[in-house]
Length: 446
Ligand SMILES: NC(=O)c1ccc[n+]([C@@H]2O[C@H](COP(=O)([O-])OP(=O)(O)OC[C@H]3O[C@@H](n4cnc5c(N)ncnc54)[C@H](O)[C@@H]3O)[C@@H](O)[C@H]2O)c1
Image 1: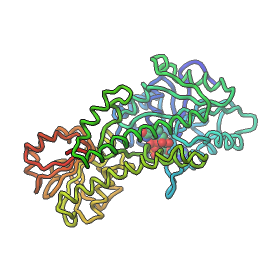
Image 2: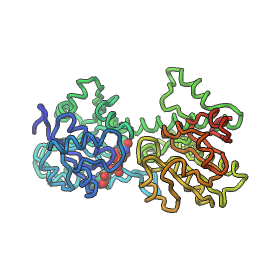
Image 3: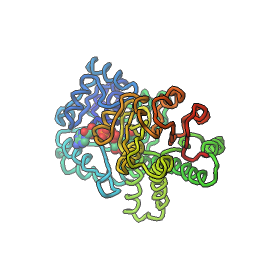
Image 4: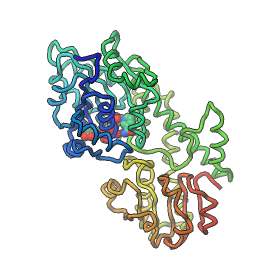
């Protein structure tokens, strides 16, 4: 196995938001890369240099390296195993239906199918988010399914990328964590060779044991979720007292121990990670008997859900007590700006809830329309932000895309039947909208 000199031969198993970005970034670092995914449509798109989702800068990297021949995608485990010495695992670890637990079946299947095909010397590095103890389970699968005598190293390096900054975060991570088995110096040496350029540029590397590496990722997301829910709990207090949560956040953020980042009050968090990681982390901690240590995280989740309910309640209040038969325009479907990811999107949860309550809901989003249409076919969709307002009695601003904050409220007035707006993200210029004749309510603000 080549452990020291670039280019290394690398595979990435599972090419979704994490894996496709990781594969492209590995190629950008100069390695020879094969991406493997069981979804043949994804493989086909990726081989054409197209990301099957919206992520800034990713198409360019994919196009550059697939054209250069240093990046290729396949649906074959055999091809990936035969090609590479280092295998990253980026398959999904979704929440099990009806439970907080992670569904690890994709990860287990990937290891089971990869193991017997691996070179006699190989390194597997997990990147998916997993509950503590997962790597030990995967080691057993590996032992059962690898060829006798094969020397397969297993390490875990959780991923911290943020969607919509995924390329940047992968190439210039704020830290890298590597969990290794007791006494395994080989994995660290190979890993350092893979990441030589990034480490050389100054990203810190924390080398630790496997349980710590697994826990770091869960703990990081639990903390981020807590920060969001903390400021949203303060928003609830503001709503009862006439205080302004935006100013409150400002007053907190200048304290360096608290900071501004992640202190954005609003409709709360969603997406494919924070909600399920919060649930999975809590579930695993309870399995381990740490119920009391994580009891507060249930409140973090409850506060987050309440922001959605509060937005629906605001809508009802602004429409005279009922939404039945009322036309409502919704700006935003993606769980956050800069992505077309609608997994557990707060915006769509609110839109769907209003629709179920009897409203006629028209949604606009700059990037996530196709995904939203597929997941919520009963909602109506408008091709542009202004036409979503046609005949509406209320506008809901639910995903903080910059174009919504930049829109001209005076020009928009003519499109809507009744100029009322709820700013659930706190990014509309309230004075400007009110001066343009809109009745505006914002979460956590007077
Ligand atoms: N999306 C993020 O921002 C992000 C950030 C950090 C960590 N993570 C973690 O990364 C993991 C992947 O997340 P994602 O958002 O990329 O999910 P995703 O659903 O976009 O991608 C998962 C991919 O794995 C593929 N897959 C499933 N089973 C497979 C198998 N047996 N073999 C090969 N491919 C298989 C799927 O087809 C899919 O393309 C999760 O554990 C997630 O928590 C995600």
